[in-house]
Image 1: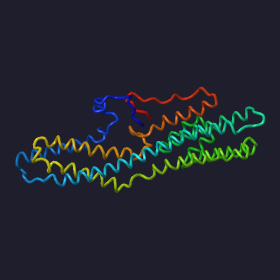
Image 2 (image 1 turned 45 degrees about the horizontal axis):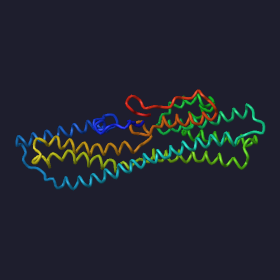
Image 3 (image 1 turned 180 degrees about the vertical axis):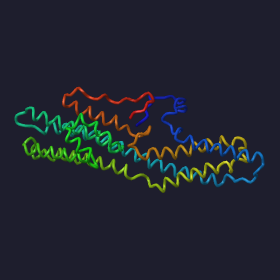
Image 4 (image 1 turned 180 degrees about the horizontal axis):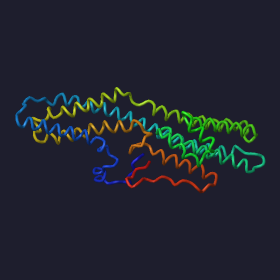
Length: 312
């Protein structure tokens, strides 16, 4: 999913709840603030008088900010690479549709050739949906492809451990059949085959992002350091901030918890979080684009942001 807002004002951005990480970090933020309030009360009642200086917090805070920034940059690179791969998929499906409809031809055109074009273009449209299901782990949704694939192919796809790759293999077999019929010139066959190879390369890039997260040890270290820093911060500022300690801790914790959560959210761009890539919108757009080349009109509606400005 992805959150879309039409040129919001500065105040609207500040007050926005949907699309921010506030809800994800609210629990830990409340616990940290309550702990800071408890520490403040302990010092106010003079139950404890010893405190820390701000020096270690200043040093650790700078280093922690650098590490969180590096992690967020790494997460955004993964997000942007995923978007570029799906942008390449858009271009490849359009080009492949054109290649099939112009390079696969018979001396005497007839229903058989028209059926071949329709079948192949429908397979291209089905592939992009299958790739979305595959990346999001939505294996139960392959039945939705029944409107685009023959029943026999649908069953084979659903039983495969990697349905999109199985579909690419079938499309390759369909190309071979057309070549054996003499519908594709020997010089044109490698052109369409290269598009199939490009589909597999794009899918491989997406699978690499999905299967290779940022090392867990790095994420674990970030979570721990952020938690220790935020929970220890009241002991360093209570002598100076006094009753304002919980507020200061809440503000600092919101910054660090928020940066930590944003990096984690960007790490996997193919999910269904608010700021993940809108794969359903992209795959539907690709289906509409390629099926329009067949002159079809019974097309699915293009996805629009919902009432919360979220695009799936």
